[in-house]
Image (spheres, rainbow, N blue to C red):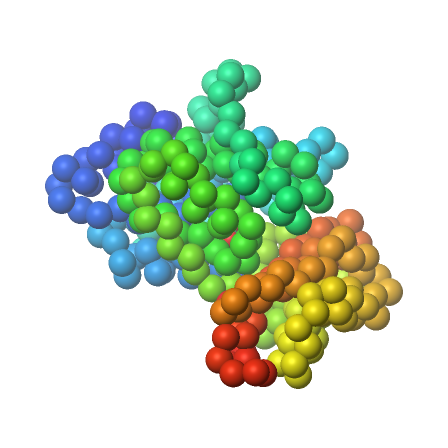
Length: 284
Ligand code: AMP
């Protein structure tokens, strides 16, 4: 695996791969790699000739007072994990390499202004849109792999590709969970043992919402309240939002909550299309 630190080096490497007739798989991350990230890398390796994993803790997507400074960073560990998963390149630029100056041009994600994360973390999804735009501009034609764990981010990225005509095929990958249901996240590293034991309440709340829909409930407010109340059963966890978004074929259930000083998010899909009570559960 080749470690690349510069924008020019990254562009040249991927241009070279394409010139040699190889397809590119791009896996953007903020590092502190875990099995969720590696599932994206492995999928990309299956579907593309050369995979590039990127690691950049993007300051634009953190608000003042958020966890930018304490975000876990361990390049050596990430390097061996990405290599073992089959990544051909690891692009790990410095902040100065990506933002050599205060950016004049930024991307805003206007269409998702009413989304839950946009409301809870103003500017966050715009920061994501800006850095993903830069990565797409550098990488060139490719398939890009994103996790459904960050479902609203995925919606923004899909929107970018349509609105800004990137030659990128976005591939959505299912959420990887710990055996107790907790979605894997780099931020889980912040949790104390007691918090780690409490954290699966997010997933259990989503499952309670799912059970509610499967028993025939079709009022999103009721389903949202069931999830919110469920999170409330865990005294050490404070809900940020719990919301059911209905759709024709499936509903999406979203939860964000504070476990101590750590903010975690999760979501699942619940199919409702086939028959009055919906099809069986399909997890993502
Ligand atoms: P992050 O490093 O948190 O920015 O995540 C990088 C990519 O990995 C994003 O596309 C995430 O959606 C994805 N990802 C993070 N956690 C998981 C998970 N538990 N399962 C699947 N994908 C994930």
